Image (cartoon, rainbow, N blue to C red; front, side, top):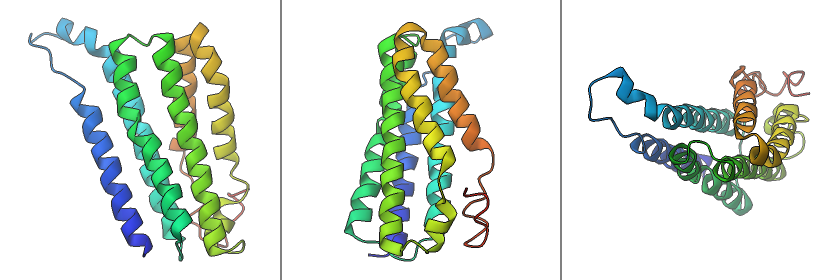
Length: 196
């Protein structure tokens, strides 16, 4: 199997995830700004989740540009990631419907944590398939941003039961970290300084 098929399938799944996400937003029946206020929690959840899905899509795309070989374990690791990303829309809707109640916020964080773990597993599978000196391995480096993200998710999970909005702020912080352009894959195999 070529990496192109994995990329195309992943693109389709993430596009469907975003579509499901936006379908959860229901327009009010009244034509006033006041009618939009009750939708604020749902809209904030939508924005955060859209940003997360876009970040995963961008990073997945860039990472696969440096990949030359795929194996069966890469296919399964990729599907594992897509499974967790497919739950983002459900947990976003649950948070919005409940006004960011503790359990839905913690569940959302758990899904983000598991997507982070799944992405890590995918990176390790790609390095195993392409070699420790391959462009993908060099670009990944020590993956400081990935490890930091996972640590923040672990802190946010118990925090969600006491301060759900603080957990949401941490989720936003992780998204902001990843919105900063990540040049690891764009620089190619010789630009490994960013990967450190």
